[in-house]
Length: 469
Image (cartoon, rainbow, N blue to C red; front, top):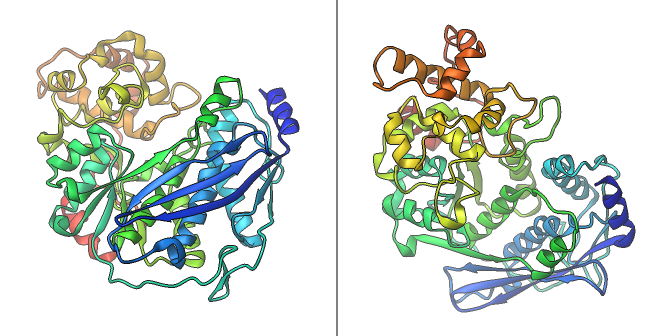
């Protein structure tokens, strides 16, 4: 792939962020982004957001323009990566040297998996050069350059309540339940329609008017290039969630965007490297994003993860106490199009394992539609999850120690008779590897875990500590 990387960079030496466009409608705004590799290959991805204030034309509203321009800066990476042009030219607006450095760091770390899985050897300095080439008069507001436009205005509305991104898995369900005391002033956020996400929001007590579905459309040219053999792979989707959810919150006067990223998202996927499938869910990204947004956008929307203080084990335990979600939650990427658990991927197996101390194995088999713990074909994936393999799966899964702790808890329950089932084959295999002897006598640090490296506002802290610890 290294040769392909070099070949495509030579063929497409420049990637250009030409402009963004805001089209205001009565009840929504449409965003269009214009990217290209030159005259021959162009991309125009489109986003659509609902808005609360029909009397406001957001085409010239300052904060919305800042958010739109910056959403384009994160959206562009999905298109740039297919050829990895050595030059990125920003014509859509102005960013200073500090911002260039910030964006290059986010791109590089967010593309860690992409570079690793494609066998691309590069570094943060050389993988791209960012040039700013905006034309005309740059709009200055409070000393902060924005874009090539002028005559902008501000709108100021009181912000209350939470915008809660919902993915349909156990984590966002736990956040919904932890915030149930604020439900009347909350909205649920989703990028594109997803049945599992909508079901979870509905069961949590939110109706159609409380669910904000933002529409994101990829340009067909990107899919065509992928079919032709251009580069493809993972991009930092949660960074897209960050910028788009803050924009959605701003348009609907929400005070907070409340994520569901737990402490384990900080762990690298490949040991000894910065390669992290969950980089844009990490605390580093969260902190970097909050600082950047305050300095260069200042929407007054506060972005944080409610679950950052907690372990996967605590989240699984709390989820297990809400049986109404058992048959409707989903977080399997492979089976997402069919709205099901595939039963063969790392995500399915990890969720099965982490829930196994808290939900009876027979019930788990019903939920997932398969008996994964007795499926010996899952051993290679199992080895990755328990730390025998050199790298974790490139999926949103917890740490190896969390998985090992959950397995040992379940083995103890079975061997003590608390779960009246035969020890599953994968757990027999686990004991044969000596891991059970290593972990069974360790103190379990995860049940009462509270990670102080978080940005949870004080007004939320007492409730989440009371319910989770």
